[in-house]
Structures are given as C-alpha cells and as structure tokens.
Amino acid sequence: MTTARIAIDRTAVVAPLNRRIFGSFVEHLGRCVYDGIYEPGHPTANEDGFRLDVVDLVKELGSSTIRYPGGNFVSGYRWEDGVGPKENRPVRRDLAWHSLESNQVGTDEFARWCKLTGSELMMAVNLGTRGIEAALDLLEYANHPSGTALSDQRIANGSPEPHDIKMWCLGNEMDGPWQTGYMTADDYGKLAARTAQAMKAADKDLELVVCGSSGSSMPTFGDWERTVLEHSYEHVDYISCHAYYQERKGDLGSFLASSLEMQYFIETVVATADHVGNKLRSKKKIKLSFDEWNIWYLEEHQASDEVNDEWNFAPRQLEDVYSVADAVVLGNLLITLLKNHDRVASASLAQLVNVIAPIMTEPGGGAWRQTTFFPFSVTSRLAKGEVLRPRIDVGTYNTEVYGAAPLVDAVATADAESGTSALFLVNRSQTESIEVTVDLASLDASSITEAVTLHDDDVYAKNTIDDRERVGLRELSGASLADGVLTVTLPPVSWSAVAFA
Image 1 (cartoon, rainbow, N blue to C red):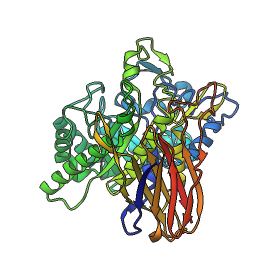
Image 2 (spheres, one colour):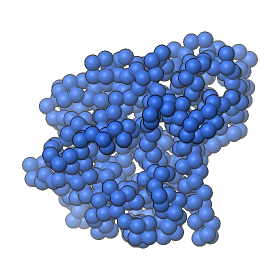
Image 3 (tube, rainbow, N blue to C red):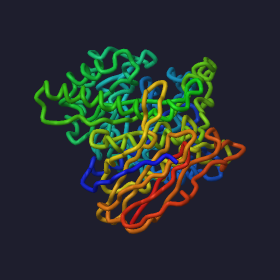
Image 4 (tube, rainbow, N blue to C red):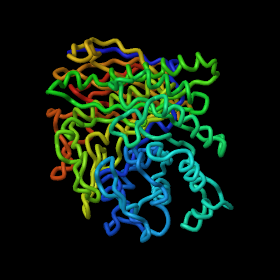
C-alpha cells in the first residue's frame, strides 16, 4: 500500500480563519432565484415567498457570505426595478442569459433572505451599462439610516433598518467580451477607481472588490490585474479571481489535480498585486476575493441550446449534476483556498441553488444535497481558529496537463479557545488506498471526535432527482490516534475530514 506522512506544526499558521472564505453566490440566472430560493406557494414558503427547506440546507452548508445579484446579470441590472410594490415592478430582458426578469426579488427581499440564512450580503454594482451615480444611489438606499430621499424610500418599502452592506463588488468580469459593457483594463481601472473613491467618500469603512481576470486563460491575464490596480490600488481592498474546472476528454487524473492550476492563479495575482503595491510605495496589501469558483461543465453547456432567444422566465440553465469525482476536486479546491488564506480573504462558491450548485430543488417538491455539498459543509463546520499549513511527504503521479502531482493534499485548522482541531485531506490516486500517518504532537490532540470520507467505488456516482441520497458521507474506517500520531487509510479518489479534541 502507498504511504504518506504529514506533520502539523501548531506554529505554521497561514492566517486566522475568516468565515468569508466559506461564501457563496446567488445570481439572477436560471432557477437559482426563481424556483430555487424563492417559490411563493411552495409548502415551505414564508411570507416573502422564500423556501424554508432551502434556507435550512443553506444553513447546513455553512455559507457565510452571499455575493449578489451577479455575475453577468449585474452588468445590465437596474436595481431600482427590484424595490417597491411588487405589482409595479417591470419585467425586463436579461441580455446575459437571454431570459426574462420579473424583479419580484430585489435588494430588500434578498437582504431579508440573508438574515434567514445567517449570512452576510455581498453586493455587486453595475459598471457595465451604468456607473458611479447608480452605485452611489444603491449604497444610499441600502445603507443610509434615514432622512434622505433614498433611505426614506427604503423605509417606505418596508425595510426600516439599513441593510449595512460592507462588501461591494465593482462590476463583474469586465475583461470578458461576453459581458455587457465590457471594456479595456485601462478604461475599467479608471472607472473602478472613480467609483471606489466616490463610494468611500460616502462610507470610508466599505470593503471594495475590483474585478480581476475572468480566468487565468484570458489573453490579458496578469496585464489586466496590473493595469487595473495601477489605477485603483489605493481605493480598493480586494481584487477578484474567478475559476471553474471540469474533466475533459476522460482525463480524470488531470481533473483531480485541478487545484494546482488554482494555486498558480493565486500566486500570479498575488505577485502582480504586490508588484503594483511596491511600485506605488503603498503600505497596504491587496487581498484576493476568489468570488467565483466551482466545477462547471461549461463546454457542454456552450454546445447546447440552453441560452437561446426564447426569452423565458427562470429557464433551466446550467444545472450540472455532480459526481463523487467532482466533489473530491471541489474539496481539494477548498483546501487550496485555505492554504492561501493569508491572501485569499474571501471566496464565493458559484452558485448556491440549482445553477452549478450544491443544492437542487424541484418546483412544488423537495430540495436535496448534491455530492459537492458534503466537503463544503463539513469543512465550514469543522474549520475554526487558525489555518495551519501541513508538511506533506508523499509520492506523485503524472498528469497530462500539470505534470507531476502529489497523490495527497491536506490542510489543517486549530482553535485554541475550544481546544479542537481538524484535518482535511484528499487522495488523488484512482487505484490505490493510501495509508497516512499524521504527527499531531504540537496540537496536543488526545481523541478523534469525527472521521468521515466522501468516496464511492463508482467515481461518477451522483445524487439525482430519482436517487437523491445515492452518495453521502461515510465513516472513515480504521482511523486511530495514539501517542500524538494519527493513522488513516484514504480510499482512492476521496475527500476526508478528521476532527480532534
């Protein structure tokens, strides 16, 4: 049997854990909002029309921050359409996804939904077809207590308390030709800087996210970040990263190593941001907001006719059904975000319900967990305190895309206050179980409180509408802890978590 050794040093701290790393994303796209989180008339719907069975699953998932309302959708969005009496709200065409938008869910409703789920609202403003004035108006409407035209309008609309939104995205994927109103890095950087300066004149404590590249494969990647930050560096706090992964042409080995590309992405953006900061003689460090990341079989959707000119309300779009392999990769991507938590301070799993999502629903019916739900929910629940970077001694396997990839990846957390710690691991081998011994001496752990794994003999097993509990967590059999040494056997193509006290 292949073996691996891991050592965890309590002093090898990456960063204190910021719950924003467990954020998610709700866009007005497909059935994410309508027939997803919102379905008036559903047996579980509350007075606002929100499905409480979905609310319960979002709480279980542990989503901390929800980015809203897009995504590509935001670049054509008029926020004013989504406030006030519902019967007066206009129906609009959404050019991003070629569908009709009813505007029955808007800023006030979504803010109330976030309170139901215990999550923080992270708002995006439209810098595609709009600009500074609309962003300032939305900020005043959402956050000013009272006594101004727009804050009083919010109060009259049934939200007497300000929504107190702290984190704001300055547009979305403005480098992408698919984006309504996309522009050059120079033009966007200037607009983002002016918008950020104006918004912080209204509230200096806002946290602002400037658009980075839509992906590391973009032809302007790196140069886009440099140019945008040269204009906006002193006015913003984060730069965004977006990345999606999928298995291509049956190359499971490369797919399982997708986190190596994410690591490259993070390191490149950090180096570029720090270059600009040094050039400007700035004293601050720009953080990364990895506010879109997931498994997405984009190429298959692009080959279909899901996005067409029929202009329907809430069409079924991008409803990927995820496998065990997809979930293992997602768990590994989350490990990578945590291992870079000193710079990746916020992240959003895209998206939350129905659209490339961990939660699925049927109109009038039930809601269920996709395979990808499990590594996210367990990591969100168990990770506390500080993130620790382990030392891993393990062999590699060869991949067509990334070359040599380690067979095992891992990250740990430790919480001094509660005296608990946790270890998260993946086995990328397609054929072998791997026996892992972990030196926990510096954690002073004496007992295992939980040990689970996500694995199936069929790596492509899925939870479907007809078999909603086909895949779930299993006990990680054979896990033992003695004299400060943990021993576990990781099944092939698996994600696992072990918690200690």
